[in-house]
Amino acid sequence: MAIGVSLACPFPAQQQERAMHKIEIPAYATQRAMERRGRIHLFDRIDPAKTAHIVVDLQNGFMAPGQPAEIATAREIVPNVNAISTACRQAGALNVFIQNTIDAETHSSWANWFAYFSNPERRKRMDAAFAEGSFGHQVWPGLEVTEDDLKVLKYRFGAFVDGSSGLHKELQARGVDTLIITGTATNVCCESTARDAMMMNYKVIFVSDGTATFTDAEHNATLANMMTIFADVMSTEEVVGLLEGSAKPALVAAE
Image (cartoon, rainbow, N blue to C red; front, side, top):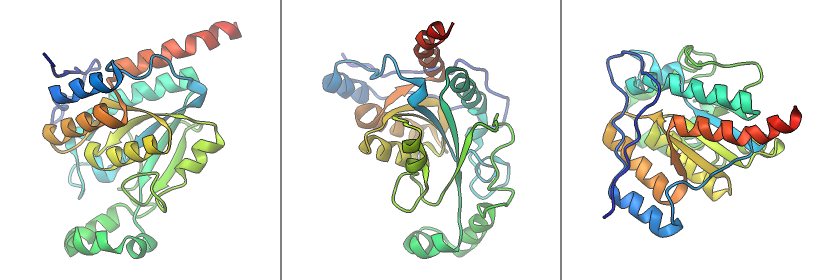
């Protein structure tokens, strides 16, 4: 009988007004994954030198209380995202911080989104929140960012769609073929980025307790989509273990 997968968070969440998601991947997703590939997890090892941790839109505009696109749950995943970032640095992988950005050109080239999916009042608030240089545009201060990390501006939900960002070019220049996805919103920018990445031939790991959105239902629906078709769904603990295990041969050889 097929069973669902429940992935508990191994790192303590901060006490905020909204708890982390209750992760319950539905049984049909695990069953279809097993039928398609014969196992739940896709990747036993990765090459850290060819791996990038893509931190999607963890900015004040999505995380600070009272901001127009606030997702309270996103504040709770910060310890997990930092743990993965640290593991990436230690293993020799790249950290990339994506920043959702709105400007005049975006309004022109993506006019239908702004015209039909957002009322004028909200559109005005979002424009102000995600204008380059604004408070909302800045990376959340609780994230650990170093001078070796990369920041990339993004002008669509998915980071890889044409006209959205220079992420693909940056990754290709560094020989990256494997992506670890964290950030917010799980079912919007994270899912859009992961879907396109897989179809552009990247190996994709989607972090179940390193992504966040408005409700558990939306979060788990995306995890089901990822597991069934698009990515290897792992917990933070599993990702950190994968990075540490994959880096060991290189570290031994260097000694």
